Image (cartoon, rainbow, N blue to C red; front, side, top):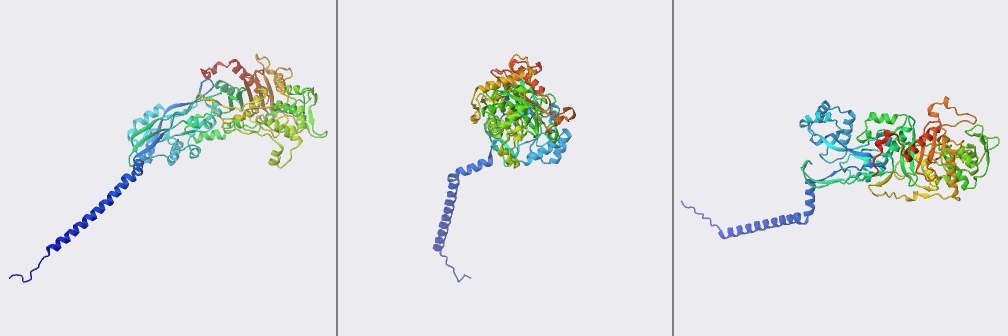
Length: 624
């Protein structure tokens, strides 16, 4: 039976609807395409540089390579600070799956101390780039290298790397002058460009190494490397080689330095030798010293404790920081001050008893010669080192003229141009005592300063520099270590420190040199034991008290502990007419000033006549 309800379809309407839907979909797709294209245009064109940079940051890294450190030479070309190749055991932490297991395996192969493991753990906590190796054990011996190489294939993350390390061939005699490098700490990075030091292990800590760090370090190399997602280097894309640090050439004479150190024998003390023509430091000795090589790659806690706790204070730089009473070595300067301010003259006579009193019934300030010296003049006071003459002179002058005159010679100031850590000593004044002790300056204070005792303290480098001004007849040069940096003379920016000390009568310089020459040549001169040299020596002895004696108490070395013995001092220069070398020497608790005087004479012979013992020929070098 046929369907009675026939359904009529509207094909035209359906066609129209389909067309509208197609058009809508096409417009929608077109709009989406336009949005997508605009986004692609924005990313590919507008933001191109930004995203390329981001992509490179994820894919490319800049790695710095530390440069070889500049070398340090003495005046004759002897290398005092060298770079030596070594092999070190290193670990890359990112490549270690089980550190406890690795530690046990390495300990079975090599003798690795707890200090070395602790140092490694500390460096691992510090900032570094991913996959940068960390040194565990430095300077492997051939036997150690062979043992670990056999098992390297199964020690994940462990490798043996060739490295350059600092080496000081002449050890403790030069430690306080040259200084040393040590491992970089976070504190060190605060004073340098930390970016340049990425990958570097060492930095100058003390001495020349510390002061000239910016010159010795050089310019690091830069490598552009491709890394994977985990930061591991896959390929080197570009490379800029490191530029080695600049070489330093010192005024220091290695033979003179070592000879002076040895001549101090078992005594603690210091020797400073200067070139009076320019202030160049020929020798800067502090004894005892230490082996600076111990500090290069990290000193063990045991070795450091031994140095730190030693009663002989080997880490203390006596030449720069040692504070000593200048004792009678101050008398030439006191005499010049008296002449300058009209408190004395060369011809005025003075009767020197065995003591001096400020008041008739007051304290007696004793002369070293109990019976006194009789009638003397200013020149004779230098020759025989008459204490009472300088007691009365200092009393008449008072502290203000003394302070003002002596300050011109660098007393109370840091005088060294290119070494950090120098002490200022103490040149006292009325204002200083009021600030320090809340007391006025007393006449007795001036009396003590008159012979270089009391409140006055000076360092060996200060005393040597001051003597240089007398040797030069008034030309003062601040002491300096470096002669040239490669072939360029360094510009310290402190040229004003070199100056001419002006006095009213310039003839007093020559008179003083003559008096100091007679300290050696006169039959009563306190350094007459130095007679007989083929050149003329000008000098002055000194004996510095370690503790104060009571008014009528006598110094008895036989019944005193060694540490309470007087310090023995000597200043000298030669030839006195046209000096080529100035020396200050101090033997701590040395007693007699004959010890530093004899040492000075031996240094003069060696330097002026090239008369060194043959055993120092290895330090002769080649000036060419």
